[in-house]
Image (cartoon, rainbow, N blue to C red; front, side, top):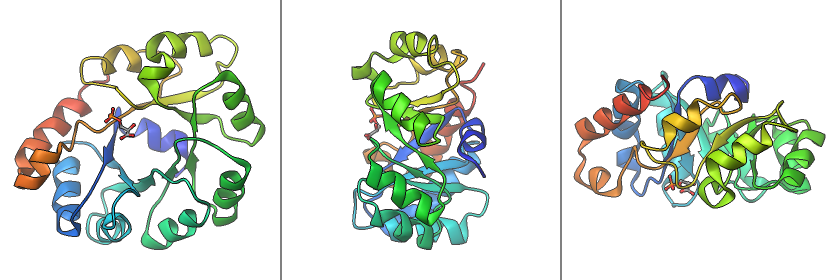
Length: 207
Ligand code: 3PG
């Protein structure tokens, strides 16, 4: 599955920070039950790669990927764990080479027009605007849509259920990313029903 297809599969890509591997499968099932199939498991915790492996094995309806990839060797580890795509907060020649070598679909992070052009030069036209809020969010995406209209964005960082609909209405936004679908307290409490409700609301955001 290519990145654009993944981006169009859900209006919101949940940015997941999983501290305990036993949360991985119930969390993924709760999100899928609410209509959110694309899951970005950030490589910020010890539990992350094992969580990806468990979700890939036990929740086949989910399209599980990894986020927070900042070192090239993480692409192979992620692919071997079952990740179907990878997200990076920025883009460097080493990350480009690492992703291409492993052959994992990549959603690279960018924040400036020059970074967008660099990504295009490397063959990536579906990009994450990160950190979206600090980069100007709606106004920035609208402005980039002029000279760089061929790029489809996933703004991430500071996006909320309130700001998402306006972003999703932009022609150059494929989906948005956000951590609000899996709040720490709901995860700690194992409140999967609440997470399904958050997912349902997120899945309905694209008007
Ligand atoms: C992150 O880095 O955690 C993501 O950009 C998500 O940001 P958010 O918590 O503002 O949704």
